Length: 367
Image (cartoon, rainbow, N blue to C red):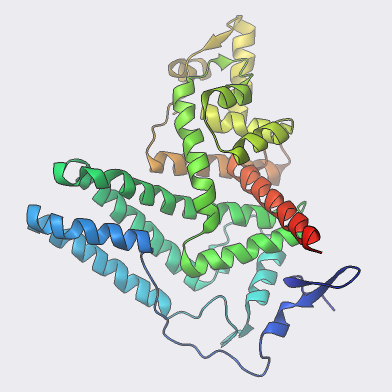
């Protein structure tokens, strides 16, 4: 019988006892499909909306109506999403019984390298559409607020909420990448799968809130660093000197930069070009006897247009992430040299490992 590994650990005198999560369900009862109220906005987002909308109504009634219509559309989409069965409860569906455990099993077992859209729950797909629509709405509000003197104080909070929502989109990708990685311990893959179900259910994620500020700071720093393309050495040291980062990021740099894959993924992130382009550029500069060049010269030496100097816009961040993600997947599939994960994959994996260590240490400390 296949072991059900989504478990709760129960302490005994000598060791841990694994308890099947199904024991927490009443096997004789199936959750009836019901209309669930979905909260489109977080408490912080609701507060921000309530603070600016009355002022916009006074300043620009037409713009107020436009924004209110957009918010009403988002609310309608959220309630449509709420009519789909919860991913965190047991349901009897047309294809058979579905539980959180069976969904996690499906995510772990399906190892197709192609697009998985048609294998994902409908609620996950609809929720993703809602999230993208919310990102666009908050971005529009942020741009409008920026040019209204009476509302300028709200520009940064709205921009932050836009970026946090974008990171929820990014974290979904990272979870799917890590779940596919059969080299990872199955307990980690199941933990990421459960986190993914929680993300799909609410489209608000604690990992996004923890990771987003760090990666955003690194993204901002890569603009300030103005790296010299050539030897491309010392990137980790440069980051440590240039940024006042949180302890978790510094630990990641210190402990993982010796890993070749992490180093290569870091270079792709910082320099904005692929591992293959970095390798070609190194060879060209070495042959020409040129020690280093600036970002604006990269395209000329590679003989192709390269957007190495991406801006700080959240869309640039996500776009370049997806390029790095797709390149990593292709290298994995074709067994090519270079990073098989993105920097975001490596960092969230590291955070998971550290959290797991802390949980284990806390458990043993209490025993």
